[in-house]
Image (cartoon, rainbow, N blue to C red; front, side):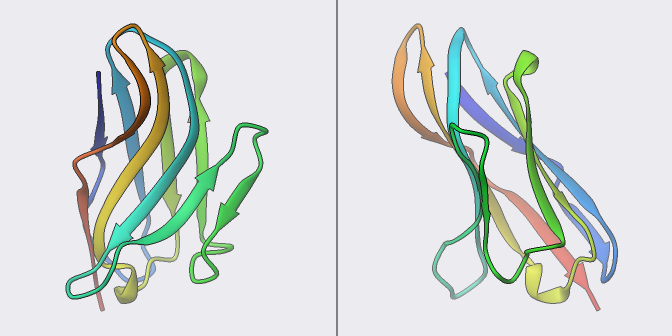
Length: 118
């Protein structure tokens, strides 16, 4: 059982990217999902969370620009990033609490690089 983040890349300021986080394996449920990011020389910070009651939380720096969502049938969740800024440049990590045949706990994806050029 693992989480796989994808969708990062190089984009110009003002552009958009959609990150995906997919859980592989026999998954019974995926809850308490989130995206975090870590820029060079900085600590990892929360970007967005999607909670069990479907409420969402966003860092102030991304409110109104980023949207977290999920696709239940495919055990995938997303981070749609619009109006990207150079300060959004970071490695983005996904995380979720998984209940699976061989796991019951929180996992982290491997990270995907997002680079926003000015």
